[in-house]
Length: 321
Image (tube, rainbow, N blue to C red):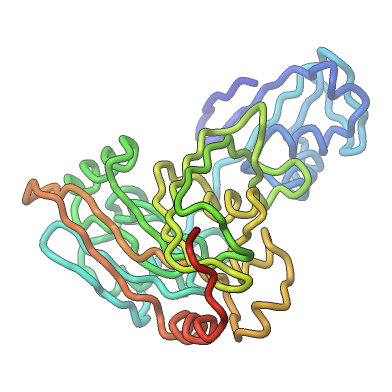
């Protein structure tokens, strides 16, 4: 599959492999291009942005081996970010960086159809001159958290700090730890989960462990407390793939409690009053770009998770072997 940029548009060209013979055109494209949903692919087909061997085809067209599919993704329509006076918790701040604690339910950055009420909107209000640092839609943001994950996020306040911290993230020298309450009793005291993670072929909004393609994902964990039917773990990310912790613990049959996407509905969450996924980014370590020293910032569990943990601690504990 080849990609090219053309006057702001992205052009994707791929040759149909033997294993894809006979599949629908929209299905093949949705499986091959992770950033597009099937409905988005169908819209592009209807707009004439997809050609098969130089000819337009319908979404239900059955592809043949060695055909060349060429898809053009138009540039996104521009939108402006608005500063909004939203409450945020600043855990650490100096002249170069700020570390904030995001609450569960808040999206990190705007996207089309969701341009307000995000962490970025709040940051633009509270931190002057942030706009434009590191990109228009994600000013200053070094890394992200899922909407329903709470905890620490690192933000750069100038371009030099952004570039230095972005290099650290790429080089895996920024260390991130999480607290998670997972289903079932983990027998090991500690462990490492190492797999490939790719976009799910069944649900394009989900990620999944893959055995033949995808990006390397490495998650370290240490058991803190064991209970009758759940385990409290400290999790350290070596890589930072989308939904990595949630995918990995679901993969080993210990999904994060409250995670409806990767763990499904569970009675235990209802019994202990858990209304969100129990996943919190509790510690962040990075090399300060201005002071040239390691900085470690910590954040306590939010009240709603503290209450759930207190409820769980009333259960019978399972001792270490």
